[in-house]
Length: 430
Image 1 (cartoon, rainbow, N blue to C red):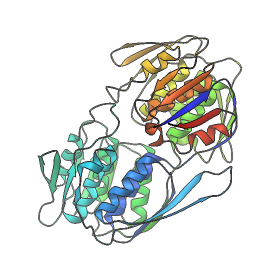
Image 2 (spheres, helix red, strand yellow; image 1 turned 45 degrees about the vertical axis):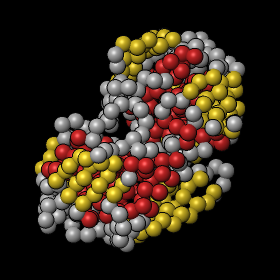
Image 3 (cartoon, rainbow, N blue to C red; image 1 turned 30 degrees about the horizontal axis):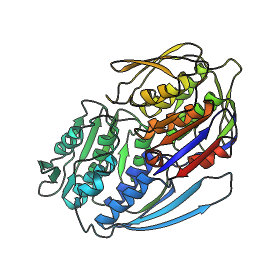
Image 4 (cartoon, rainbow, N blue to C red; image 1 turned 90 degrees about the vertical axis):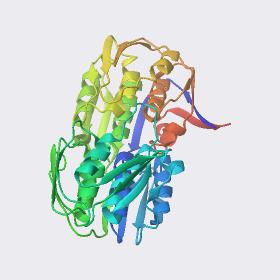
C-alpha cells in the first residue's frame, strides 16, 4: 500500500497547474447516459474516482475513448474523453461498483429518464456522514417515478409515457440530488421547477453542458432552476471547469509554508468566500492573466473563525485543510461544520503532529502553536488526507501519510505539483 513521505520546512515557489474539477467531471460523465450521440469532455482529471466511474458507465453500455497528453511541464496532465452510449445495455448499477463511490448513485437519474427504469445499489464513499438518499428519491418521485427499496437496491420506474415535469422544493440544499433531478428533468414532459437548488459552480457546469446538448435550462447558479423538457438530447463538446477545491487546497498550502505560487488555469469566482477568508488569515491573493497568485504576507498566520455552508459559503471540502492552517495561527480560531456530522476525523491525526484542537459537538477550537513536528499519520477520507499533507509541509522533520488511496480519489499528481515548487514529497510503495 502506498504512503507519502514529506520532509517539512520548505517554502513553496513556482507554478501549480490546477486540474479539471472532480466534482464537475463526475456528473458530466454521467450525463453521457442521456444521449445516444457522443459527448466529448475536455480537461478530465486522472483520478481514482474518475476511473471507477468509467467502469460503471462501461457496465451500462457507454463506449469510451480516452486521449491524454502532457503539453509541457507548466501545464496540467489533462484528458479528452469521448462517451458514446448508443444503447443502454444494463439499467442495473451493481453493489460491487456503486459501493466504492457515492457519486455513482447519480446514474439513477439518466437511466430512469432515458429507459424508464433503473436498479441502483445504495451508495458508498467516504465515511464522513450518513448522506442519505431520501432527497434523491423524493425529487424523482415528484417527477412521477415509482420507487421501491429492496435488498440494498433502489428500484425506480417511470409512469407510462415517461417522467412528467413538476414543481419541487428541496427541504435542504443537496448538490447530488440537484444534479440528479436536473438530469432527469431534461427528458421529462413539460416544465420542471427546482426550488432551493444547490448553487455550486459544478451545478452550473452541468447545466451548461446539458444546454449544449439541447436541454432547455434557466436559473442554474440560483436557488430556482427551470427546465423545459425535450424529447431527446444530442452530443456536445464541453470543457470541465477548474477544480476550486484543489485551488483552495494549494492556496492554503502556500499560506501555511510561505512562498509565492501561481495557481495556473483557475478562477477566483469559483471560491470567493474561501479566498476572502484566506486573506484574513494572512495570504495575499491576486488575479493574474493565467490564474491566481498566492503569497503569504509578513505578519504570519492570523486566526479566523469559519462556518461551513453550501455555496457561496465556505466549502465543507476545504474545512480540514483550513483547520491544518489554523493549527499554526497566532491565536485561537473556531471551525463549525454544518454539512456533514462526522467530518472531524482528521483532528486526532493533526494532534499527532502537535496541533492543539478540542471538539465540542460540531465545533472545533484550534489553539495555534509555534511549530508542528513530523509524525506517522493516517488519512481517513479524501479531504482529511490532504490536510495532513499541508500540515506535513510545515512540520519539522518527516511526516509519513498512510492510506493515500483516499488522496488519489481527488488530487491529480499532487506529489509532482508540490515537488516542482520546492517541497520534499515522495510516494513510497511498500
